Length: 304
Length: 101
Image (cartoon, rainbow over the protein chains, first blue to last red):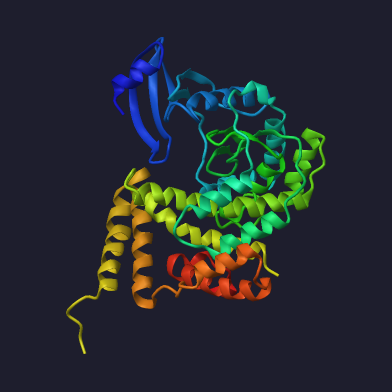
């Protein structure tokens, strides 16, 4: 990342320093840097992605709509069709640190309830606030994604069959974050400081976000069902108090199994980006073998 | 009897140790993380070269049968789980529940 490009993107920036790439390789890149604006240094983050479908504009609208709904979000400093510049919020995003380090010991027992509250606030956003929100039939799309790969997967197939057989009645659609889990949340000793990565924002069943947070992969080895840190009861209590809607645990379970099957397919998808030659990357190649972990987790969820 | 020529698994192990003991401590951030990913990949290769991956030639047929609804769930489940456990013993044994390790 060149300093000149950052100077162009940030209005009023006279100088930039400390440019460092935080994440990359996926469809989004994140860079951390400081910018000198009106004589003061501002800690900032650049998120850049592709323009067009699933563009950064949707992500920016989601950030702003969530902030209005009471979700802690970084302030957006500048944005375009392919980038976002926002303030940098101090805190931890790495799951294994949040789940294991002593400095988070006091906040861990409160996180599940807080996540429930935040999801309820996200689901209160009017879909009209975010243009071009995608909605579809997630199960049909996931089956098509998995079947588009040469490797047959009996475990994921069993998962798809179970999902088809137990499909819940449709529910009124809400705005979903789509990727609400550790890794995409900035956590401090005081709790959730920001909800990031709105790349997968879409419309759908409110239970989808709740179930997704409980997918075994997003427990990162933690022993508790919600994100590795909390209980279903705490998550549902926080959600119900803010939304006024009762949570149906069976429905959430369906979405938990769905999220596990979906992530299995998404791992193949990521490996394909490497294997097809479009984006050679060790990380993407390695993710391909995490499909087997999702197969195992699907089987655990469906154990007779 | 002494060995003077390393096997493929031993070469993979030597590269893994280099990454773990020399590259990871000397780097930070993304580079250190990618060195860890690389070391994990080499660990998989070592286990695969030692034990081999399970036979999955019947997988396509099994998928077709599941889609057609013509399999007994309990019977299919046990067979599928056995294969998946064998794959995870290669790719990431720590992901398994203690009883499957």
